[in-house]
Image (tube, rainbow, N blue to C red; front, side):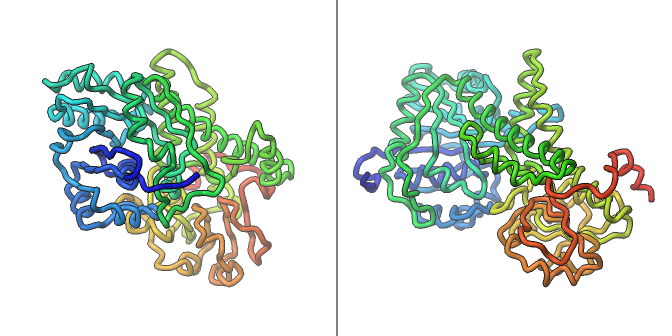
Length: 475
């Protein structure tokens, strides 16, 4: 298929994007790249000032280059005035979980209330890009009606267009999605189809930082109702979370029976009904999506008096993985009081500086409570951690080597490429004891150190219970 420049075959639109986090920045960059004029809006003056200086406030490979290449079609502001001239308005704000797991919609409510006074008399589509509970599309419609004197059901509509981006590969996922989900009225969905035409038809010029895959043709377009689109997002993330927790539960049994979890998952992943992706055993999931969305579905079930025990079990298994890593450590060191533990990785996954629900956070917090000194390293996330993890007690490692110096053990918490390619035999002599807890199963070759991995090593003693670990705090 020939890939032409957007301007030769598509009608540009004016777009407003509310929120400049991971989703908002990715959406703005994508839409500007395929030819639309985009205004990014955020209430954070600091973020907007950075973007106006062409500084990107998050780490996402290739995003800074893409934003720089489309600066002429991008504007950043803290004001909502741009909504008046927008054909499409995207809501890309956070929906953090509340204490009971229910998504907190305060930022969505605030965005809708701020959008409403600026709606004009022309056709405008308001898009929920944020991950929101089922029924939020109707809720946003009511908010727009209540706060706008110009709202008209004939001219204004709310669409659910969930994102399916993976941090670290978000640029690729934006430009070459496997599907685009559009939920709303037929007229509103048709409006969104015109907006996304260059993406659907793949007629844009691929950026140098994200070349088009050779085998890629075009995304599927799923046109459905608001409620179904909202459910698709939650259900997709919950299913992926289930796969990860399944792999981790099988890993625990594999250790006890002498099986190798990576061989087991390779074997079952070859079944086309199952697939090999998201079957990697390890420290469990983190980030802003899986835990929040799984809890969101559980919360929705609770609201409708419907138990969801499978999803609850997935959450339980995930957080048990963090405890299991501590058990491995205590099994070898017996007590952690006075021990020095190196932590390799702080971000919840490689190629991002996102620290939300990162397993390393819980490990650092627990290790400190048990009397250990933690020396943590991350190739990218340390500056952000110094701000967002100020409540934790740990030392920053100025280099990978410093995390090993005089360490009684080193934990691999994030599978960065920097760590996969380490010369372990050159580093372990710097330790007091050559003990590696490889919680991401990245060490492939034998090394001159004791290595404990997930689902690949048999316990050397009886498992230590959570109660025993709690008691160890007082030692």
